[in-house]
Image (cartoon, rainbow, N blue to C red; front, side, top):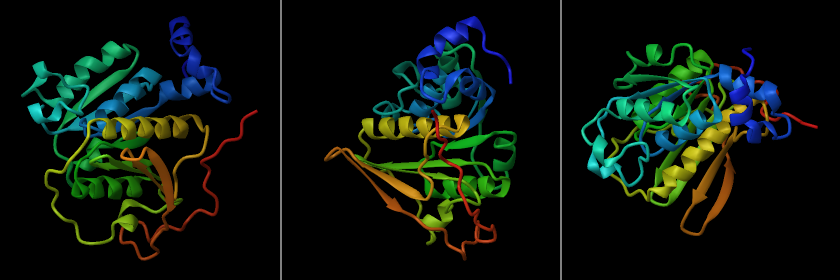
Length: 259
């Protein structure tokens, strides 16, 4: 792994002070390549914090342009960006937060035909999408390639999150096995995807550094209405058409003990 420069040692000093992180952990972060699929309410805060943390390469994927109705929650996009491609808007701003991060904008729709190339070569995937159909396409590709997939979704003041490790956890199809319903507009308080995007970035950094315990086999549920968090256990469906063929690993390495 590439050594850290003097400026990087200063920039990341506070996070390298975390027990078990150190220079080695930061070098892992620098070497990581993360795809953020969707640069909207979830993808904006997730990409902001991953860039600030020093993730070496961010691939941001989205097909849409900025709309006025996005601006209550999609914090990378500003009034002056309306009608601009979201990936272009984000690609301009993220290097200003951290010029040491490489940002690769990919404009296009996530489909069964495009997802393979979109996710080629990445270490993990952060879900910033807004519909279950596209999420299932990404889920299937991540399972096929063995890539960790950090799922989140929001509705109103509620948020949901789980980390999918192929072979070690339920996949998204295990959680939502039924027929997909076409998504329509739904209510969102802007702070809700802000909270969940930050949690996704936290999960990504834990996976990269090997520190802490991720939400594998658990759904984290956030309720901004009463300011509560709870978790529910989720189980792998042995008959799942996406991951049912994969033997479940006997031990999931999601927690690293540190001195």
